[in-house]
Length: 144
Image 1 (cartoon, rainbow, N blue to C red):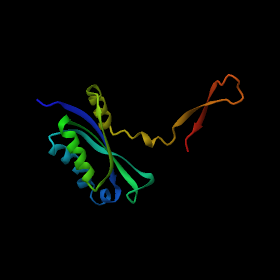
Image 2 (tube, rainbow, N blue to C red):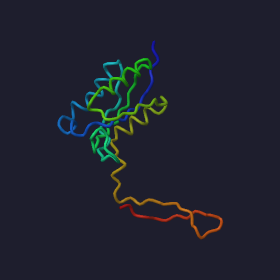
Image 3 (tube, rainbow, N blue to C red):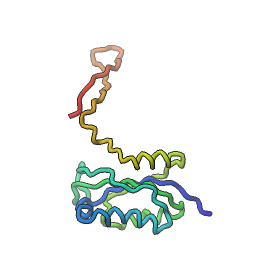
Image 4 (cartoon, helix red, strand yellow):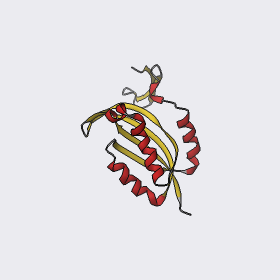
């Protein structure tokens, strides 16, 4: 029996290709994983956002999150296939501790988008320059 690991994959997809055919572009990730004998636990849209700088002429990207299981000896071949896919601008695949698999899969299935908290307040911790001992103080600010 071959050793199998749990992986977390974050993919940045070409936003133009995704807008034209979202099922095909995002579905290619799961199909590729399954073609190497992997099992996809969750595959979903994370968000779309503007890049800090253009990547391969693209100014925006669609971020796609995927949790999957795969035999360890197939990982390098899988990376090669994702590198060759023109619809994937960038990707990062990391191995997860198996104990984190279920909580992360459940969290991804709840479809929580943490970036949409528009009226949330945040606490800024800063050092008061007038204090000699450099004590920190807290200041509430509303996000803009």
